[in-house]
Amino acid sequence: MNAPALSPWSLPALRQRWQLRLPGLLLVGLVAAASQYLAELPWLQAHGLSALTVAIVAGIVVGNTLYQRLAPASAAGVGFSKHWLLRAGIVLYGLRLTFQDIGQVGVGGVLTDALVLTSTFALAWWAGTRWFGLDRESALLIGAGSSICGAAAVMAAEPVVRGRADQVTVAVSTVVVLGTLAMFLYPALYQLNLAHGWIPMDTQAYGVFTGSTVHEVAQVVAAGRAVSEGAANTAVIAKMVRVMMLAPFLIGLSMLLARGGVPGACGQRAKIVVPWFAFGFVAVAGLNSLQMLPAAIVSAAIDLDTVLLAMAMAALGLTTHVSALRKAGMRPLLLALLLFGWLLAGGLGINLGVHALLG
Image (cartoon, rainbow, N blue to C red; front, side):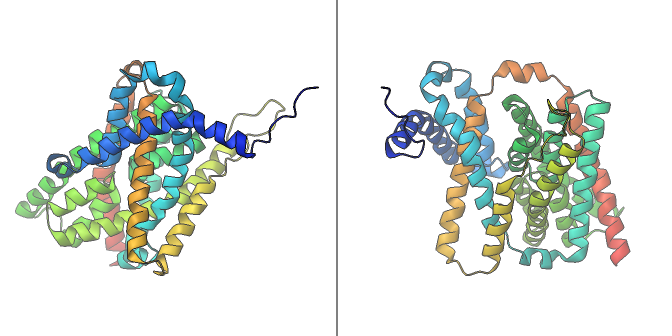
């Protein structure tokens, strides 16, 4: 008689599963740790390059050199990092903001963020598929990164969009390049406007504009501090409100894709992909808003979150081949440039319009 199959939750089965994952987790952890160390270097900090950005670049370098020999033993752990560590990282990301942040920017700030997000993402979907001939997944991932919070939004949207590793990496790359450009361009334009007086804009208005249109949180901080500490504080709050819109965005996107999805084998509509981690994100942000957790625990959890997201980014980089990036060509970058122009010009118009409307 054959021996009975082990339950997937039995101790021997769990031990075997984690033994298979261990080499990949160690590799991803090593790349993430090195990336966090490098991200602390003054030059990288001055240019707004976070640990997440460094992790994906380092992952790509290792993935196209050493990883080819390590892949058979490491694939299980790398796949686990891309899937489960990413979701855990997005949930803990809620500790970086509170519902009180909404009160600090007011109705005008929330409305500005919502209009910038929806208009940018709609433009990405329409122009990406119609003008640039990109596949829908690439257009939506680039749109998510440009309209919400950069690399973290791209990674969070991937399970809903069901994009490939190379599509995610291309989207993250556009965020890095154009977000870095924004860090230098925004302060320069502010000083130019200050000298000529074209548009009435004080440091607080500049902060809201920056927070509602620049890609990454680190890039928002750098662009804000280049003008003043007060501008940076306002910019970060506006950005955090924009980040808080990630959860409803993912739920809405999932419903939209299911509604207009390709019918399945039985002629039924595609099922809604419920991003449960988005609910976890909101729940953690709500818990943080109660201010019941000790500051030391929140700080440690945020550090852990950075590690988890860096490991997920490293895993993504490890499974991305340079040939796939070359194959993507210039079209993703052109779409990202169009969105960047919209964030700059259209985002400014939305900011000015909302300010004039609400006084």
